[in-house]
Length: 141
Image 1 (cartoon, helix red, strand yellow):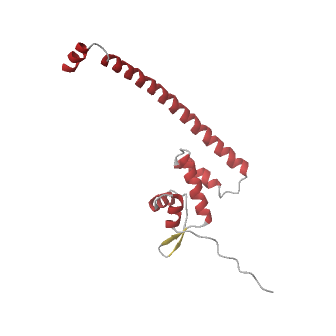
Image 2 (cartoon, one colour):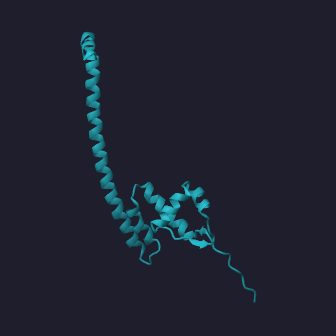
Image 3 (cartoon, rainbow, N blue to C red):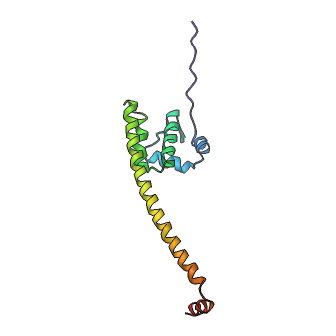
């Protein structure tokens, strides 16, 4: 009875992952130092599994959303946990809701600042549009 040999699982080098995700090998090593990735070693070379690739993808997705690595790490760690999907999704929703609140506060602050800038610009333009003698007097000061 012939046995079919299973192909070895796909692995990746640090260079392959860096190119695929358009990040530096240094960034990948940083994520490794933070405990987000755990590559195997073959001699001095790091060998990344599909699990590492997925964890890197989740990490970068969280960063694109503006999450800190402290917020991303528990979410990425849930990828490996035997817990149910509902718990993972609820945790993610909680993090997203908090991040949304932060961004909305920042947007409000930006809108207030932009309104103040517009007022200052209007005042400067009005002063510049004033009588020419007044502009010369102000420039001489």
